[in-house]
Image (cartoon, rainbow over all chains, first blue to last red; front, side, top):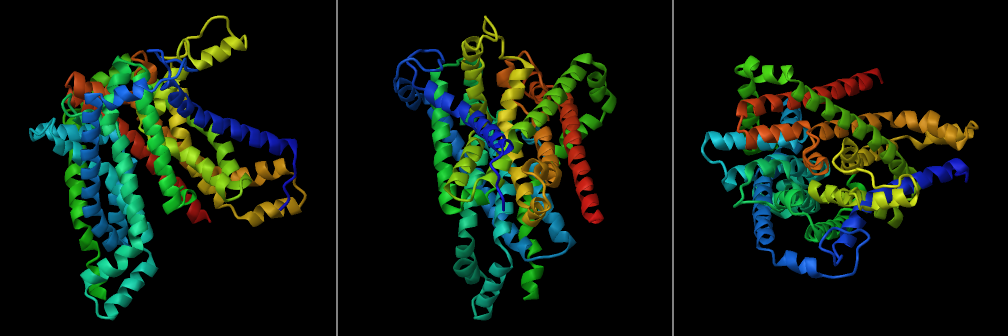
Length: 264
Length: 274
């Protein structure tokens, strides 16, 4: 295929590179600003210090928020796997109107703005007197992460996995051992990817959390959201930089396990 | 083996029940809360110019963000799917696109808070280039929200357009070249039209997400600009007006579902035509 070096081609590539710079700029700015010695946000940063990172890692409010985020993300993901794995297994091997409808239904939270999930969960919690407790918060997160688990697993439970499991059954294995010894190892990459997505989606969520958290029970993004409106400074840049570093690490993990260009 | 297949659907029962209890019922009661006495709930909203202004501003921002996302996202999508060979280069670009998606909206927006301040980098560049003698008020404006929200939404637009571009049959492009078309000609008359479904899908995702945006608008608007989701939050958490909040949520949900429905009917009509 011809690839002529026209001005048009160069221009197109330059525009694309400029856009990529736009995508990188805020990340670079946050990481750089986190090292400034000034107590206000300065970019380009003035001086160099790790002081803000030390303060963040000793900040009790952030550490508590980190704990709550971990509890909520792990709890929601665990429930999503317990519910979603059997569902994906069952739906992948059924055909017909009902199974398509149920698959679409399980993916439906993806269509709804998460502020609505947050508000609805909060209203439900109030009506049963459970507002401000952990359960509605985890429930709201479960709703938004379940579709990711179901979708990732169903994509991996294709006909070849099914026929391998049937072969195992034909050779005498019962349903349980066929699942654990044959199907599970085959889908473990997809399961890993699904769990990773679920953890991340829950970890970074603000909209559901902000309706269902209290000052005593805050997730990390909600803590950040409050700080950004009331006490802005390089500490926030340090926390954000840590988030960016974590994101880059996760992206590398995804690339080495699944292959990042297969995600899109 | 038919018993294995038949019981398949039964395995999804716990998940279905969980979603009904935790998603459908709460959402339905949220909507019903506004519908029980529609006049009392929707009346104040639709008659009050404050609410109508918020709705208008939200739509304005969502539309601008969608347009900007296309302008920024299409070149990158084109670059990564048609101009960069599969391999380390493509994977690095994908990492740049996807990494921000793994951080919270707060983090994604914070960078712009630093950049758009009175003494921020953008103002420094503006003064250095002589565009203005004094720092411009960039933050806490609709423009700031558009810039920040575009940043949040562009990865979705890129990934959707990449998917569409990758589905284009290469032989069509080769045929255009063989018939004598230039690079630009081939792009504008073959590639671009064939990628329109991707642009449409991306636009719908971005528009819906932008219309329901909360964090970015709160942070970059600084309280001076109010968008729809901020209103919903205020109704539920500040003024404890659950009925009003329910009505607003219903409006948002109806908008989102309507857009999704229009898109799905558009897509099914296209596939029937083919």
